[in-house]
Image (cartoon, rainbow, N blue to C red; front, top):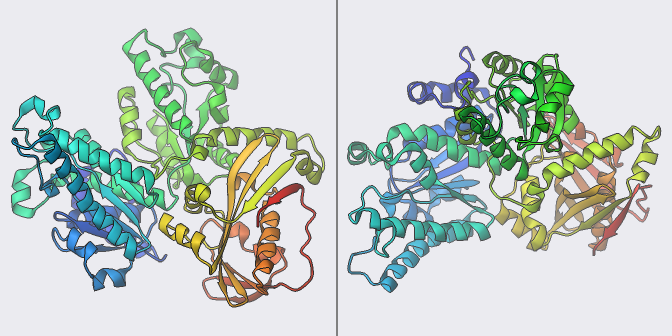
Length: 600
């Protein structure tokens, strides 16, 4: 492109520029993508055209081709619960229900009793639940549903939030019902429109002129922010959220220059307004770390000085919070590449945080796939910019998310141990590895779905599955499904591998085979293959057919099936290959450096 979309479509959003150029940008980005599109249906309770444009724009900018279906105006209910040939043909993978407070029609009356208000809350929830259930009954899709922003007016004034018949209290009650549903339904994602409207400002959010003229449920200036937020949730569902934050130090995590000002001279703590601001930044990063985001350091500094900053008595972060620590005088793009290699994650999984505009420009220019939010130099804006950029969006929060940083910390210990062995096999034996490999079960299904939609490198087909599709696979007599968990003397790596195969007579076609980068080169793929063969034989399967579909990231497994003894059947012009393995009476034996605790 002659004009860099990436340079402009970054957070904070330049809304005026986007409004002028979004059509041209979408056309250019669409022309540059040839990958199969993600099918996104937008079912609206108000006009959806502008929202759809921005959702498409932000997905295209992230390299995701997309096709969008839009319902007729305010037909979200009818198009969901009744027969809909057009939507059936479209067969959506993601369904975004664009409703808002304009679609709340059963507000409490002043004369309503408490029980009547509760009935209206229940009936409102059931109305929307009927939409969700109808859609999930017809499509293997993920639903994204807005909650409701606070009402435009409060006839009761401030007590609107406290009395039973208040519109504000009613809105909160309905939102709570939506949240409870989202907590227990993995294929349903709640979009927090209420928060977005509050952050945008309700006085700006509601534009009655635009509502009466165009049936826009919110100010058109809010559409880029809304589209960005929804697109971020779609990307998270596709496993494209960022995984690690690369942090500068001086004037980013503390005020001042540690090498010049010394430990006592840097600004952190509560002694000044500046120190408090940096403390809050560290508290925010600590919270990201605790929910599974990896923290790393990339600083132009002497290593001893850089590390000393975290010994400050008021520092929230400690050295143990960082999975990688690069403090030297090399160019930061080189250090960031080394960080990605050490963590075994792609550059497109990294976010770079630096107060220095020149460093941001350098990294953004040389490492185009690294996200570089424009945090500026005002520490009071760092959190707002990073938070609203939605780079670390989640669709669910699992125990393994919370323990991810510890898992990578254990990997550092494993790397240290590796250096003590001349022979790699001896090193693997020293890890005392134990694998549990079993068919899918209810307890593990959420993590299996999450891993499937996040894993890109060791992934033979890069197919994505919704929670509903995974549930269908688990219960299907025509599918063979296995997951693998690996632990060793350093700790539990959690669920790290998934296989799904479709059975047709005596042939099993492997639709999905993936493994987490955390356990590369640990022979886990051999253990999974051994168990796959055992389960296949128990089902009288005589032939395994494997598929490899190349992507930008999975080149390392292009010869995976060949390494297991499969024979190549075919290869098309796109590089897609098909492989076959005949299951005769010959036992599949591998000298594995791990113990398998298998289940029937």
